Every structure is written in structure tokens, then in C-alpha cells.
Length: 99
Image 1 (tube, rainbow, N blue to C red):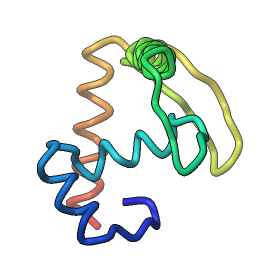
Image 2: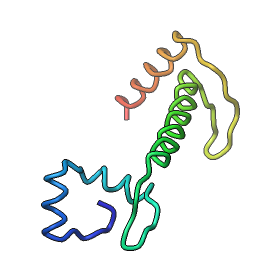
Image 3: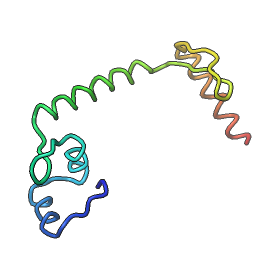
Image 4: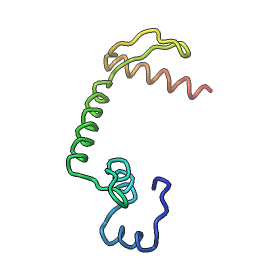
């Protein structure tokens, strides 16, 4: 959990209500401040889920992308064909075995 100390009571309630530590982390990120804590609204969870789906789509688009660099300098980028991907991976594996 994110730097929060749980009381014995809170630990029992988390277990009874099937709230995982990771769920609590999300609630702490998404929740809105109210009098004595946070409240997570459905519209907040929907907005967060939509943003995660958008990010997932962007990540999927990266499949097959070849980034050529020299240290911190970007040389070029292109979509590598499957045969080129295999060749690059085999070459990298051979180099790793040689080291």
C-alpha cells in the first residue's frame, strides 16, 4: 500500500469487504477528498478506465517498431518486418551468449 498505516479495524474491514491492497492504492489515486477521507465515484473510475484503455491502444501500436540509437542519440525509427525482428533477436541472443 502507498505509505498508509492501517489500523486493526481497517485491516479486518478490508478482508471482510474483499478490498485488496492494490484496490486501495487505486482508491487513493482516484478518490475525491471528503470530510474525513476519500470517496471514489463511478464517473472517476470510468474516466480512469477510459484513459488506461487509450494508453493500452497506444502501446499496442508500438508492436514491431524498431528504434535505432547511438547512446542517447536517436538515429531512426521504422516498422521491422517479422523476418527482420527474428534476425535482430537472434543476433542479440548470440551477442549475449558471447559476453
